[in-house]
Each structure stands twice: as structure tokens, then as C-alpha cells.
Length: 422
RNA sequence: GUGGGUGUAGCUCAAUUGGUCAGAGUGCCGGGUUGUGGCCCCGGAGGCUGAGGGUUCAAGUCCCUUCACUCACCCCA
Image (cartoon, rainbow, N blue to C red; front, top):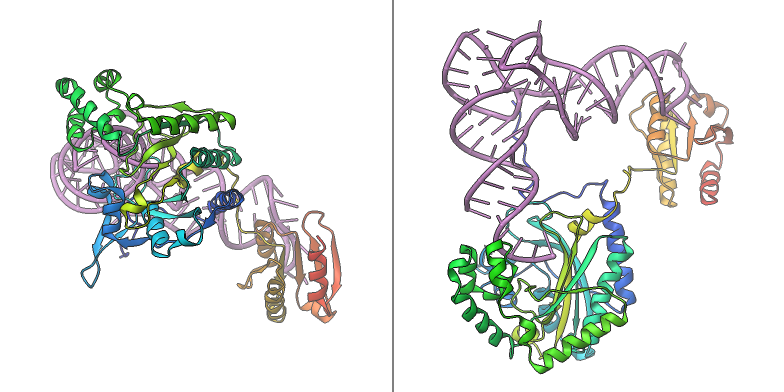
């Protein structure tokens, strides 16, 4: 009888050895570029008090209402696995008074996020995000800069088929006016709306704009547009953002129907989509959140940021060839005496930073050679009792098949020199 | 939470109307060279056909249940 095997949790994936080189490349590219733009890494916990997310993301959002992994700690405190990073970063920013040492703070972080949704293509319950936040600068230039950096990052990874959409969501002065106008408009045509949208009217009327149902689409087409309701300041801000983007030669589309799912966004909102993905085609999204830091108990500092979905991003990357483990040199030893020498030699080489490999199972030379080949080793060292008697070893160049004898004495130095010289 | 699709070897997939149908390729291990890799040849291990029940002389194949995976809605990265 076999034991039932334990599998990973639904929607939570392993990143296997063959995939990690891509992840490394993405992470490294992000670090390099963001740091060039003056951003520093901050690492925040993956767990927070539930109230942080309730307040930071919004009580009525889907995330908080039904997607959070929340549990009671042993002392009865409610904790939550983070569904996004912004709230945590702001919490840390406030908690450590980062605004005191510099009026403008640029931070990035990356790691796993958790949302309990039904998995599908490009959507997981544990997924990874690269997150960027810029605090203390309300200038439209910072909006444009952050968007530019995001696009530059994506383009550096040779991702094609990208589209950038931007919108302005207004501020606490003009958004409520717009919101009311939308509700008034929709009330007259409730019968033409899908059930979801009728529900949205109460919960979050702006979300109706996102609906893909055709009948709703025609209703929405005639609805008031946020851009017509922006106050003078917001209008000015938006127009300057656009002008900066034009200066930077970024192509974008204005999508007046884009409303982001998180309650805290103000003014600029943006989203990058890819044609390479399925229904979940949003690679990155972000926007300005000028009231949020204060709302979470900090100083009245403006902020703007974005998140990039790493799984989705990697799915857009051109496929990489399979990579396996590799070695600079393989040591094939025959017999106990040779194995013992080989063992020490292997570890010593590794201590010197050389990727040496050997096999402990005492298999035939043929098997060991196959192993050396599989590991793609440049050289193989071969020796058994015969060589030990003669105080030498065979060194085989795996590409040229040339084989030479090396004295057993000072072997470590000889091999180190040989490989360091490559 | 609601729909659709799919579950056969580690992986990718075969198996006529239910009737030697449990297979191939690949990967893994070994042999062909009693001490020399890639190519080639040969051999081997590995599956209660997702699980449970039912129909039938007979079920991978039909029916029911369940689970898993997957795509889509919802929502978002």
C-alpha cells in the first residue's frame, strides 16, 4: 500500500530548477534599472495585521471582502498574508519615519503575494510581484518618470506586444461628483445592465466601466466620462503627465474607462497589457495615491507606485532553452583509493570556486563519463589504481577529446590554474 | 462562488463500434568497450488507465459520484 501523496496547495506553484534562471534574470534586471533611477530595496514581511489591509486597500474591494488569507494568531490577533505590497511598504515607511531623513523616498520590493481567487491562466493564489513606490513627490514629472521606468524595464527584457494605458481618476474633490453623475446616469438604464453591474452600482459604481458584457458596453458608451469631471488641478496634472510622456516618446492610450480595483488611487492610473497572455492580460498596474499615507496614520505625503506580476511577465518572455546543472570539471575515480583522493580534491576545488563534480556510487567509468557529459563539464579527470601506482592522473578535454597525463603531486594547484586560466 | 474542458509510465501522447489494450516516443538505469562521454544498437525498471461505485460475460472505453488539473466568468499582477 502506498501513502497518499501530499500535493502543493491549489493555485500555489513551485518554481522548478529549470525555471529559476529566468527568475534571476528578471530580478536582476529590475534591481539594476530601479537602482539606476534612484530606488532602494525595502524588504517587508509577508504577513501583517489584518487591519492594515482593510484600511489600506479598502473595505469594499474584492480583495478585502473575499480574497484574503486571514487567520487568527494564537493570541487571537487577526493576521493576513499580504495580498499586495503597497500597504506594507507604507506601514514601514511610516513606522520608521523614512520621510524624516529625506522628503522624497524611492523604494522597491519584490516577493510573494497571496489572494484566494479561483486560479486560471496567469492567476495564482500565491504569485510574485515587483513593487515600486515613490513617496513625497506630487509633481506630474514623477508620474511620468515612474511610468517610463516601468516601460524601460519591460522593454529591457525584450517583451513585445505591450500596450500602455493611462487615465486620471480625479481627486477627493472631483471624483465624488463624477461618481454621483455615473450613478444618476445608470439609474435610468438599470434594465439594460447585467446583474453584476446592477450590483456594482451600489458597491463601486466606477467598476461598471470595466464590464465586458456587450449590452453594458453600449450603456457605458453614453455614460459621463471622468475626464470631463476633473477639477482644474487634476486636469492640469493629467495634461502635464501626458506632455512628459510625449517628451519621452512613450506611446500610450488614454482609457477613460480604466478604473483600478484598489480604492486608494487618485489622479494618474496606468496599466500595461500584453497580447501574449490569456484573459488575465494585465502585466503591471499602478497609480497615484496621494491621500493614502496620511490615511494610514502617516504624514500627508503623496505617493505613486506600481506592481508588476512576475509570473505574467515571465510568461511573456521568449522561451529559454532548458538548462541543467553543470560543472567545470568532473572527477571520475575508479576504486576506493582513487575515490578517496577524488573526494577531497572535489571539495578543495569547490572551495576555490571551481564547479567540480564527481559520483560517489562507484559506477563504471562509462557511467561516470556519461555523467560528465550530461553535466557539460569541460574537463574530466580520470584515475584509478593504475594511475595512482604511476603517480599520475589522466586529464581529458571533453570537447577535443585530447587526453594528457598530469602528475598526482600538486594536482589541486595544476587543476586550479588550468581552470582559472579559462 | 458559477460555468466549460481534461485526467493512461517522470514528461509528451497512442489504444478501431466496450473484446490480449496496457503501448510508443522521450527521460532514467544497464550492456555493446572486464578503464573512456555525445551518435548508433540492445536490454531493463517504471502505470490497480485520478479515486470510488454501477451496467456488462467483458470497462482505459458507457453511466453516476468524488477529487485533481485546466480555461473562462468575477476580479486583478
